[in-house]
Length: 472
Image 1 (cartoon, rainbow, N blue to C red):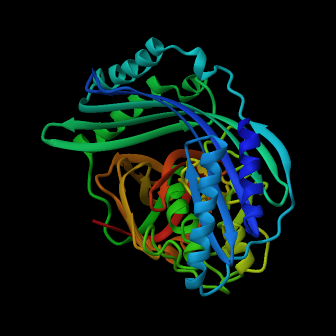
Image 2: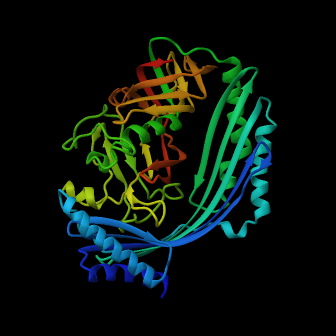
């Protein structure tokens, strides 16, 4: 029995046993990883696995199960065990599990690599991370701690459900994580730089690592050797796409995950400041519009259909400062009397799909860089070294890695540890101007128990905030 036939069998068997809904997701995943610490090779990993994740709804209860034994007897056993668990759990369910009605889809989608992973040898991959380490080690400022991790993967999947959907997908990914410390005399600063792409090895040219890493080390070195204190009192702050993008991800993206609204994530990844009925209410002034869009071509968080078989689309979370829509799966969509907007994803066949972000960003405005920096006095926050946010996503703090004074429209002296600390509503009502260029930062977002890591990106334009106080 082929893999697609086996997934189809899982759905049919669940219906035969009495399920009112069933879905199955077969995945085959191959992965290679290479690590280098201070020029010394570490343990390398070569991993291949496949399996089927199955979700059923029976007697008003939802149950998820998975197996890496991809044959009919083991799949039948997994489905049977899940059915028995659902029947038992139904006695504890206060409200029956219902999901939104969605159109059945038959589709095939893929991300095409120009330089395929399987065509790049082990020696070349080892050389690539050695070159990254060498770039860091040969800068003017000392970089005593260097960690480089390279991981490439190919993921093949087939999704089927009892609604009639049949979707196949193929996605290659490249992940380069660089963690390093810059030192000047007795002072140090750490920088974590994640670079990810849904592509093949052609992305290394796009990253331009020699230039990018040299600029990173030089900037941090200047902060350590020449940095001054941030100004006291309320001031103008210009946030880079990295800074404002992180704020978008943490203070808009996460609280707009609808499973938080219904307390599903409260004990795992936190809560939300939002309440049912907040759609249409104002969270900022009229400048910010925030979207989550998995359909951005060549993006880190790209996908065409989510892991519930729903077609992906752009979601406008905040429109001109007003709460517009949430990130939904079929469960929360039903609860809110609407349709899913394709936001449900799982990191592997072993995991139940959860509501996740993809590419979440603030839309640009129409001002040039010169116009954004046209202020008498302020601070430009270029990158961050640490951040934190409370459980409801109401209060947050972002600490600069690189930051600079703005004096009479010019970026001047480096600033040490500029700290942007404010409430979510204060942040989004303080926006004074938006640049006309959009940029993204790749990252890995964690959620769920067991933890599921998901490749995402966040971003925005240069964003100017007025009259905000920098902490210490």
